[in-house]
Image 1 (spheres, helix red, strand yellow):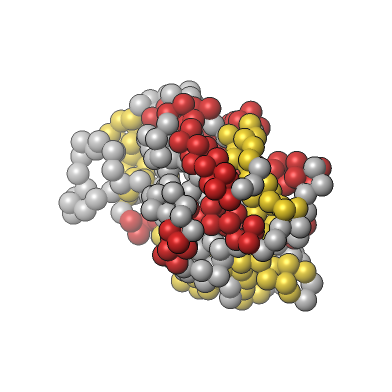
Image 2: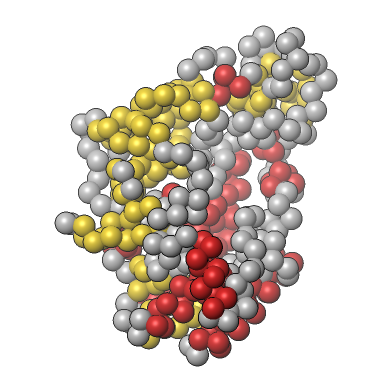
Length: 362
């Protein structure tokens, strides 16, 4: 096949590209320039930096494949960064990596690749594509510590038909060992964990500098007592404990957590961690990797964090909304995050959380 190998400059995408070459595919390496701000910063703390682009080019030269840099920064700004800020303006907590996969890596890149008569796009994500009775299915990776199926849960079957994930059957240390054996200079390069367009990792400062936010009160969620003040509600997220600057301690001396952010009144409510327990999740804009779920309740499992555990749940669709009743409550879930539905190792679909039911009402 003719394959676009998305090369981030890291060890995973480098080994993925090398395996595609070994398999006899016609491979072209592409590095995505997604954020001009991140690129200008240099270094390797985030991803998509100038150093990453240079590393990707060196790997492509080592493999003897053509290499290009595609500047998708404008589309990335509109589809990911602007969406990220708009969600914070609504008092929600978005996942920009999922939006990037949904709207850039497996939308913009795949669209361009197919328009150029390529057959598929390959990445270094840790997940597996398995041919099922009705077509390709997205499954968890063999390595549970590196599994990235959660952030790929927004993909549809049409996209899976043109996607290759060469690393899903391996553990990370085996990939690093293979990179060293191949003489790839990135064999021991650290993984990136930060949001690429916030290379210093200070999300609150990034949001404050770009979103208009009025000062307001920090209120005890149970008593209604004003126990502090803040400079902008947009800087807070559900479950946050640090940086609250409270002047009135809890009666029992226990730490307080953000349990609600009201953007309209610029009020942040805090309380005991038990107030963060939820037993129902509702999600908007569901997407399906295969056959959509229906109104009939089905016993499956859901995951709400990239590296969190899947938990049993009863799942159904109601008025084009995903409704999830959890068998046991989970703690700390904010609107704007993603809930991904699994049937054992297979990804069924996902939705963006927009409503939850608290076990203990404030």
